[in-house]
Length: 161
Image 1 (cartoon, rainbow, N blue to C red):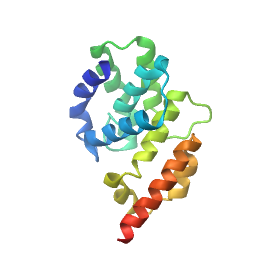
Image 2: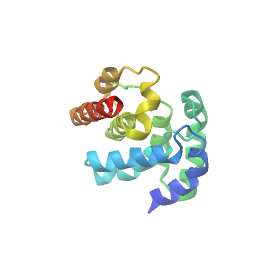
Image 3: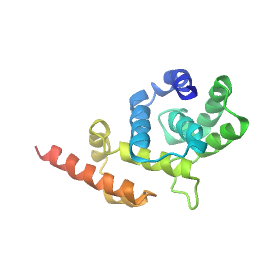
Image 4: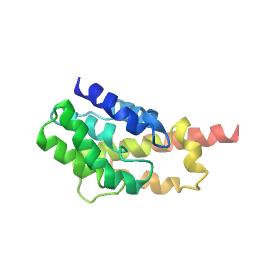
């Protein structure tokens, strides 16, 4: 499968990020388990998720370097020019809440936000005094908001223990 080859090529870049390749795996798992991804956008969604943080740890690095790295890796694996262009354009803005994004972008965005509620990432963001309600309200899908609220409740209970 193309996404397995892409993940293998992306691994050295992703390991330099704060949460490493495990963050990417969490986002992939969340997308696969919580969304019905149409076949016609599946390649795009998986490539976008694998490559969304490829440029570095900071948002600036991801926006500036990520698309160039993503394009190079996608060409090696054999993605179409159209999918490559779409993925690279979305990487440039993947932390932003866009007005009318594609379904691929919405799936990435919500899955990436949901990863913040994971056991592995929650404490990191909570220590930064993140506004969890703002994160939840920024999500595109109501189903994501429901999952996030349940996860927040579970993490809060974990923290109290």
